[in-house]
Image (tube, rainbow, N blue to C red; front, side, top):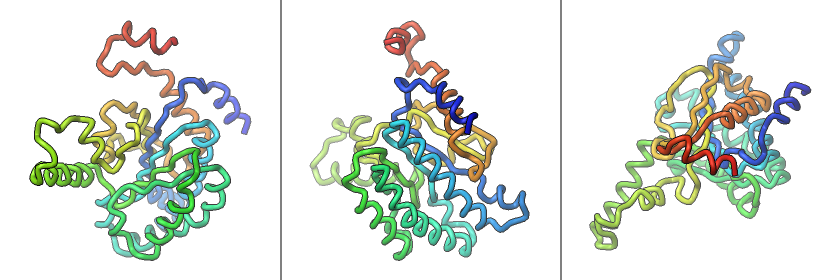
Amino acid sequence: MEHLENLLRQIDMTRLPRHVAMIMDGNGRWAKSRGQRRSDGHTEGVGSVRRVTELSSDLGIKYLTLYAFSTENWNRPQEEVDLLMHLIGWAIEKELPDLMRNNVRIHLLGDIDRIPEEPRARLTGARDATAANTGLQLNMCLSYSGRWELTEATRRIAADVAAGRLSPEEITEDLISSHLATGGIPDPDLLIRTGGEQRISNYLLWQNAYSELYFTPTLWPDFGKAEYAEAIIDYQNRERRFGKTSEQVAPKQQA
């Protein structure tokens, strides 16, 4: 606790990332290293979701986006897929009272119709129950991938062009952004991936164009508030130039 408090004192509350995205990797390896079933790792990982959500809310971060289940994850063994679907539905329902108490709003991103009926009902129920909340927006990416998202956006734009509602000259970066699953949500300032891998794995491909990337060997079930605080401190020690020079961005960062 003292270590966490020391870290929190180092965070500059005027320079928080507005939007943090996370790839929650390492549940299976965490369980294997302890001689447990992969399912035990996924269950343990729910606690990390709670911790990062709580800290995001406490700090005043506006958006937290979690990669909960990718389109590629459908290719895992059916037993594991079934377990993950059950766990996701169970966890969101279990955490709902705390989400309401902390004024957290749930937003679902991905091909939600592909999720089995029971967990889908729990997820949409939590989304609807928290719709009026005004604090942290917790975006859950389920049956999601960046290429799926871009393909769907392209189809919608092409349909508008074919119907005469849109001309090719009107297609801009802002228009494409508005057709993504994240339409209306600012791009992530910080992307955190746990588990030691250093890739973005088909996650928010358009949105991560200028995100600061933070990779940690910590497996997801071991990733808590202290590890999250360390990632934010690392982010605040970086210079974000967006193609400009240090001299151009310095006045803005010092303001």
